[in-house]
Image (cartoon, rainbow, N blue to C red; front, side, top):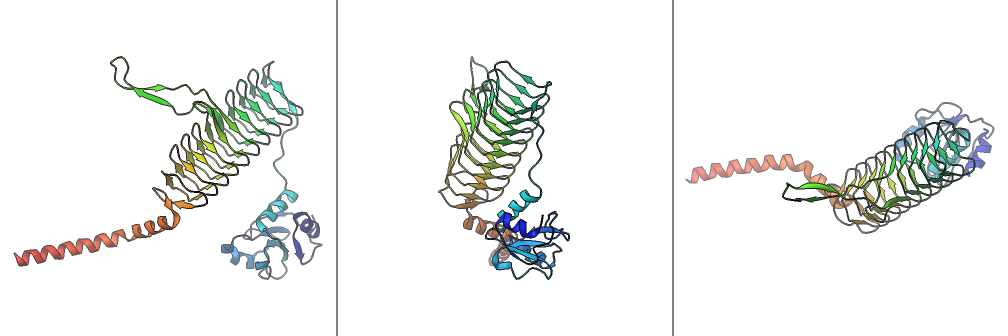
Length: 349
């Protein structure tokens, strides 16, 4: 694509030769002549000055830092503009052709919408329903009375248990499970026997709203009663686990290995770094940001940033970490002081 056309596609102003042909996208460090790159994080400013890219998308603050011979595309939001360029030049993953494989199983009471794709060994249980243009890859399981909306993509090995509901444009990557039993047991000694863990029936379901995407191997427990809910536009990385009865707000971002215990609620636009763990029955306010590996054991008011174990407001968590680094020196000083005091005591004795 000619650079001038690409600039128009992504809404950027062009500085340089618009007749150049752009063949693809790459990072600043790996870009070759003919490729487009971008800068959105100032820490990579040094790479901007040495890149071999034919053109770079930047904000106005860095428009003068591109090397000689490199065209500049100035955008208000370089990261989003580069995303638009990726779509224009590379597009999204090509999906399989429309059609129902004879090697799939579709119960005679199941309902399949128009222009759907059902690949070999996908299974649609009795009274399940999938909307128009939805794609089921090999090995997908859709349980009894489960409902899947329009334009969804379920990758290989996805399981949607009975009675669960997916909205429109939901994407579930390989081996993700929606609606398995929540972790509910009553520990009791019955009939004079030793205490045992007695399973509690999980009679609720899980509801995933529109435009949610989950990475591979995620799990959303069904509720004991009522519904576990994942709000519109929320995105999960891989290995995210949502406990039974949790209510996840709209447009949350959860990085890999986040775990949310049962009955916890998050507001809209919550962000959690990798390996964040949140205890049950908590309320995480809208706009909260939680640093990676934090362990949350109390409610967090809206708009705050927390981190650490146990989690605390981020400024406090940083002070704790800095003081922890000083502990070896403090311990050595304390040991020396104890030795001196013992010596003084021996002398006075």
